[in-house]
Image 1 (cartoon, rainbow, N blue to C red):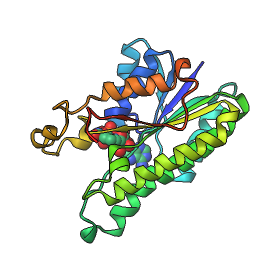
Image 2 (cartoon, rainbow, N blue to C red):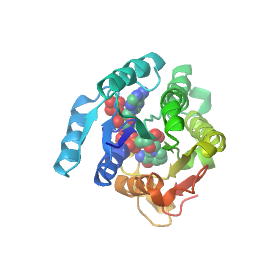
Image 3 (cartoon, rainbow, N blue to C red):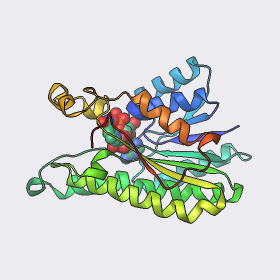
Image 4 (tube, rainbow, N blue to C red):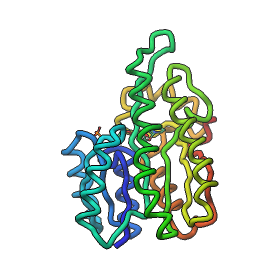
Length: 241
Ligand code: NAP
């Protein structure tokens, strides 16, 4: 059995990644924080498409919760290990810097940066031991370009890109690749309240991207064809920079 863990796999881009990886033969471990119904629906869709998976709820910002969940998973799967990790869970709490509350700053950093650190550190040892692992981090155009109203989010995603490059160099000799994906505007719950009609005029392709388009890139990065790609932040943004 080949196992792939997708954090924030219950909705949006994460759900599309779960479906795409299941299609490619991965047994998907669908992580979420609190939205059980959406996670159940993702698992139903995975099975409907002929794949299989399981739910593994935990808050990526909580190191203890991660340890408990993954230790339990290992007890239930004594002969297996998780070879693919997609660090996709993310939130945004936009505000102009002068109005930004400590909570807005810390919750975004905790989810994106600490979530990456805790989850990746926990799974990395097994990948290194098996000399086979793929890590994909969901960054953002915001982390490359810097977006007004998103100093917390841009900082977190830029940190994730820096961590991707550092870790990629660290573990490349051990058969583990680490890449980041940097989407522009993608149609999900996260962007549902944005003025799409206005924003899409800024996008050279004049539309928001689809979660499935991001999922296809993630599936490529974890496939054998991408074995020589590591330490990259790959944009998927309809030409918007
Ligand atoms: P979304 O529709 O809001 O879904 C977010 C997912 O993350 C949900 O499954 C949610 O689960 C989970 N999640 C949030 N906080 C979590 C935590 N602390 N622990 C575990 N799971 C958590 O978001 P999306 O648009 O698909 O975005 C997915 C990723 O892509 C994020 O990292 C986002 O920053 C990035 N991204 C999105 C866009 C875009 O335009 N949509 C663009 C660039 C980058 P619960 O429902 O259980 O909380």
